[in-house]
Length: 182
Image (cartoon, rainbow, N blue to C red; front, side, top):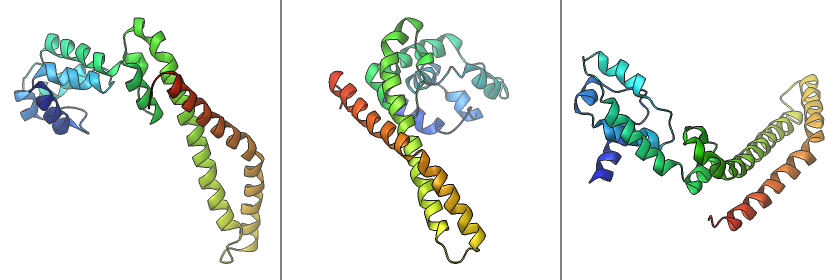
């Protein structure tokens, strides 16, 4: 039942920085805190005070903090930190200080892969764009030449970017194997 309430609350609050007056009136502050914590968000109680203050409603700080702490318990798990960082998300700094050293390798391995892949994707996109433009007969010769020059400059970094990307794939697969992740 608690999970159903959390799911409903997550849907109703998704994308919102604060709450509506109606949400303030019916909020289960423990679930609100749990939702924020389980997403790895920084505490947002100040935003709720501001939003709900418009309706003269005061959030229950103790319930929120209790729920937030419980939510962090879900969030601050090695696999969760890993998979969030793999998508370019996550923040181990919201986790209790005493857990960060244990979580840091999971975050770093996934974050390193994410950054290498993002650089590779940016390179690939620019390469396609410059290649198309360098030989586009609709462009003026000066423009085509400018794109050819950009393409040559981009190719200078090609080996480093490819090496970093493929090394990151190898490293992330090894990390997943060594740590029982799928």
